[in-house]
Length: 332
Ligand SMILES: Nc1ncnc2c1ncn2[C@@H]1O[C@H](COP(=O)(O)OP(=O)(O)OP(=O)(O)O)[C@@H](O)[C@H]1O
Ligand SMILES: [Mg+2]
Image (cartoon, rainbow, N blue to C red; front, side):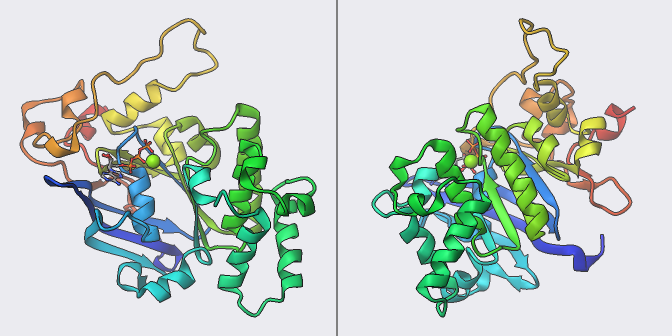
């Protein structure tokens, strides 16, 4: 992997939340790269740290509870974590944009769509005339497939359907042609048809703008359709990282295998039960010693409880990693 291909580098990122009683580490020493133009999926069960990873990169962790404890996040050579608030404002939205899991939290219910879109152009292109801003707003709404954009600009978020709101969110995120788009469960709340339309749209726009995407979802089917590479997270750790093809063809971590077995397939008889991974994600306040997945793993041996499995590079270019002491023997 040539270093000039790396657009965003996350190294040893450790993020915690402080509550009244204690401090909980929710991301524990995670490292990954995002390459130019690629789409990187992050998958894992609820609570594993997908959104916190995104919020750490955007420097939008809820303050003062959320805190990056350790590590580096480097965008084009700049360490994001040490930038001033002002410098961060020029990156957030313009260079790295995010579509949030809850569209209504990102849209302001009391302002018209036009005002909210206009504000983005005002912040990032202060010299743009009002007329040019309006033309750009109509352009971007057209691009994301919103009919009658002139009319929509005068409307409030509650006047739009869920699918239209999500398109507005995508329009807002793409308005400055960012280098990186972080999409956190962008289609989970939508019906299947709208979901497919939005996914197609994102793919088209990615090709056009040539941006990189971090695509967060707990749906491996969506990952297969949208992503080049994927990170599998479990309880605040990255347990496996691979290209999508490799991951589906030869998953190495028992957790990844469990996730793959739980995807409905066309050849699954409709009434048969899918495999599910039994048991619960460990409470982050009380992480078991050793491998975090071992309490649910069919392949646990005594040694799994002794130390944290290291993240091992298992491909020549180090892009494929797995954190399981038994991966080799289980692959035979
Ligand atoms: N504001 C907060 N205060 C305290 N803990 C939090 C806060 N936000 C997240 N957490 C904790 O951080 C951990 C990771 O949460 P995160 O939202 O990143 O999960 P996720 O993988 O995005 O899950 P989901 O698929 O449900 O969106 C969870 O244990 C969660 O309880
Ligand atoms: Mg989330």
